[in-house]
Amino acid sequence: MLIAGFPAGAWGTNCYLVAPAAGEECVIIDPGHRAAPGVEETIAKYRLRPAAVILTHGHIDHVASVVPVCGAHGVPAYLHPDDRYMLSDVERALGARIGQPLLGELTMGEPDDLRELTDGSTLELAGLSFSVAHAPGHTEGSVTFGTPEAADVPPVLFSGDLLFAGSIGRTDLPGGDHAEILRSLARVCLPLDDSTVVLSGHGPQTTIGRERASNPFLRELAAGHGAGEAPAPRRGM
Image (cartoon, rainbow, N blue to C red; front, side, top):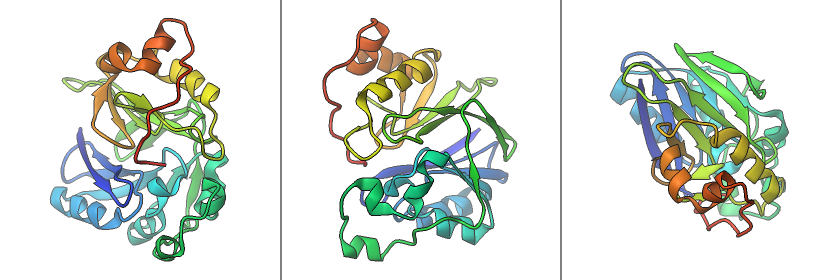
């Protein structure tokens, strides 16, 4: 499996392109702020053909390029319905004004073909399988995407802003809920094998085993206690 990722835009949001191999169809995950040029460069570098865009949640730093990317390649986008309003109403999604210079450079709205993600479903796209887990807490419609273990390839969790290396997603924006994100972490992340590679919305990759051992939130949850402290600040929304 080919996974090519790069940080994009003002928030350094990780955008990923996933394909069975170079020269094949691919899925684009979270084309955020100013991600379109990086998407096109990665497509050209690996000779990829986009089949779909899938979104971990609706915050602007993860979806700002979904309209131009989908439009350029004529592909659908997938998003949980609880975050659908965020595509068109950026400031309601953040609970604050973001400033006219930034707002003026965005092409917000829904792509022509927007499809719903549902908890427990499996997306069969570009010759790959992605398991969808609804994981609210950062936003009401946050999801993760998981790929199964294959020969010589460990399972992968695209965690969005649920889980980071050493931390978890913030919960102080509209739709955020600290108790809810802890429940999502316990339900979605703790049952995974330690070998699972975690590719998050911001920052470096990690593994479930590393986070289970060192992430204060997962350590407390694994021990059967709630993690009461506030999440460490992140660059993302």
